[in-house]
Amino acid sequence: MKNIISVLLLIASITLFTGCTASYQNEFMNQPSKLANTSSRILLITPENGTYEDIEYPTSGDDVIFALKKELNRYTPVIGVIPNPIPIENLEEQVLEQTDYIILPKILHWEDRATGWSFRPDRIEILFEIYNNKRELIDAYRIKGRSAYVVWVSKQPKSLLPRPIRTMCEDLFGKIQN
Image 1: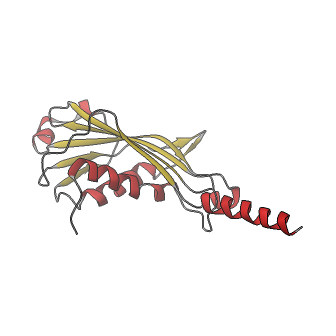
Image 2: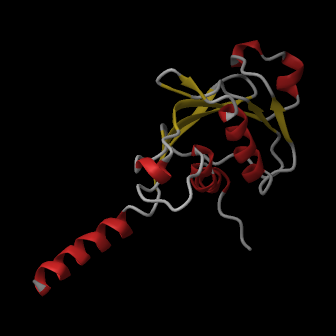
Image 3: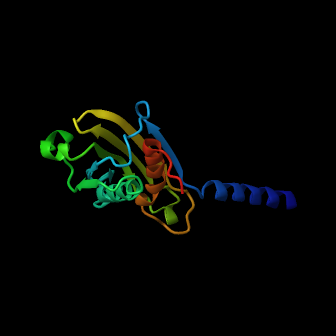
């Protein structure tokens, strides 16, 4: 009887501790390239909102831009934001002349599963396309995130953004020395 209780406690502990952490995957689509320098002028284009099944998450595009801009502020002070989703081909020439790089995020997956009571993890997948000011795609970076299966307080999928976006910026600019 004691052995059965010990085994059950061990299984419960393993399940609890392995299910209590979020997981992330980050990858460049091409060879990782460093952006020129920290005085680069960067333009962000707000993506279309994410959806899951027939549910649209109306602030998800803004959430991505907010998290990206917050992290980029550590690297460069010149960040512009276009608040509506537009194709890169529709950017005006005068806008392109005032920028060095354009980052166009695309929300591929955005899933809010009320993990606190459903034990189903929230999931995100976002592709960040990075262009130069000649509209040439120079790189793309994909992040995937999954929340823990066991959480004490339900969070939104946007809580999965900061860590992989920080990793992406470190890969693009190099680590900041504190």
